[in-house]
Length: 308
Image 1 (cartoon, one colour):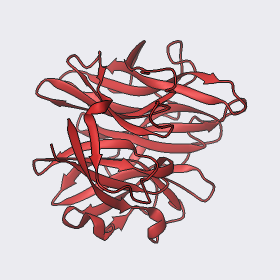
Image 2: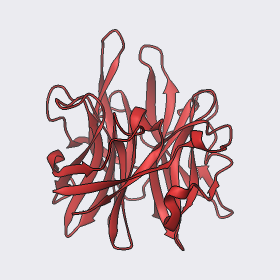
Image 3: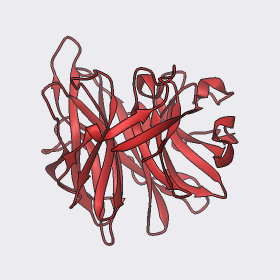
């Protein structure tokens, strides 16, 4: 059993004097590294046109709930040019080191016609002078014969000589009055973090007919066991996102163990209806979880600590 104690809300951009590109939301939070008790949390906000962009906020670890030390004045990347896969939105997912450079993996958004949107996965690479530049104006992972509609939120796990990719794959839009996507988590591999071999391998599948969305996987390894946290919705218990958990011995075949996760603490205004988009990390011999609350991150992100 994993017992997580909720520690509270850390950041909501509406509570601070933020730049114009960060007027609302702080979705899909994640951390790349720490330094001298300063932690930089990356997240995706929305501008006044409701388009997503990714930036960061720095915090003092010893005063996390005292507000940010600084906030990025500009997003990591500007929106793509007209017609590109990321012209309507950018949502950061993961940063990993490859050949001593940081690779920033993100979702690119395109508005669509018969369905609301289409997503693809892009990457930007760290520049020597600082910041990131797109590897290309096109996506590195897009829909194909195995991922029919779109691909999105992803996590990279680095092995000794290759990389594992866990990513959202949408195979169908349910044709209701308002089209509804149906997506789960699939698996791919790469030697360089850019060219990915896919064969349609499902990592996290639906557990019943009601489920229709599984997203934002996060993978770590403990004592030769691969562990994954993710968000899922459409379950019998709740129509809103909840945080799930799975384990694997080979990083490919996973067993869902959602019932192992329990949260303690009050249901506050910001996370009373939804908990989603977890990011798991260890610091000072403790395990923590960043996560979003209501409405997919509109109320900001908070923190929980593993107590058992």
